[in-house]
Image (cartoon, one colour):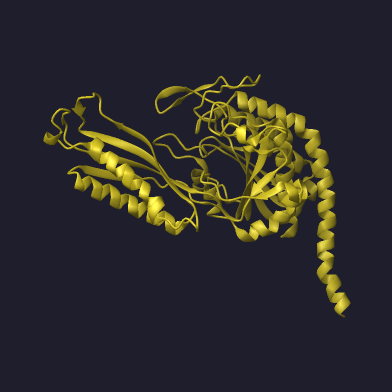
Length: 431
């Protein structure tokens, strides 16, 4: 009897392993078959980079490619988003796969044949536009996955929702956009999504490697603005006015103590940065007012509350001590990009199997932010990084994301295609 029970316990695992092996062979064959096509798509999207909520050509091309595969894409979601649904040949749960599609106001400095020469409007100015964060590869990878899964759709036990999301880098001032707007418009409904997967290519991670962690992998982010009002006067007689610049200087110094003196950094990292200060026009005029812009990054909800509280206290009391007036505005920002532990544990064997366990690195959390977190607030999600640094290159010398020299290699997309496809099939088959 004991032997029979043991067999019943082990048998489903044997069946699943055998099924995974079968799918892996198909995934490898199809990914290799479509790699050149995906690379060509990547070059086109890179060359035609567009800013957030303005991804008109990008969305049109995505829809065109999906239609050519056999999908009936929905367009105009969250302004320029595109969604397609694959109904498998067997009943099962619903998995969503997401790719962000917007570029950045960065002028490309590389010598690529497919470099971007696009222009766009950002904050009222004409700016160069570049895919300086790899979203061109994300689009192309997901289109490759859509083609691979469509090819074997009769074997897919469930439904796959492909989400091509605009405005991950943030909607223009005064507009809604991104994952938050997609969620608001119901992208995780009809059919209801059970889990969502997303990836990001990384310029300083070797091609062939994956980086991931359980729980918080990227920080919550909040932007803030501080307005300080003083009394304008001649620079030769500062006692006759109220100096907002001196007030700002004291405020900045005090703000730096929030993390260094109030955060328990052995639990999680936190950052408070002042990135801009604007005020004054001449050397001999103390201005009436100025404003500062900054960012907050946190990986713990309680620490986030403390940072916001201390920032408000510092702004209020430093201004009062200098006889100035000050106001603070903190935006809603993005939540923590949080890999749900149960889903992480379930899918880590897939990452190890596809990339090789030695190539899957468990990393510390990153203080960058991602609006994929809005999806993860609603359904369990797994977010990970794939390598884009060419073989043989020094990862320490890779240009950072969001810079003119940013570069990720075409060869990094193959692992992205295989991994996203395998995660989808493994999840659907395990449920």
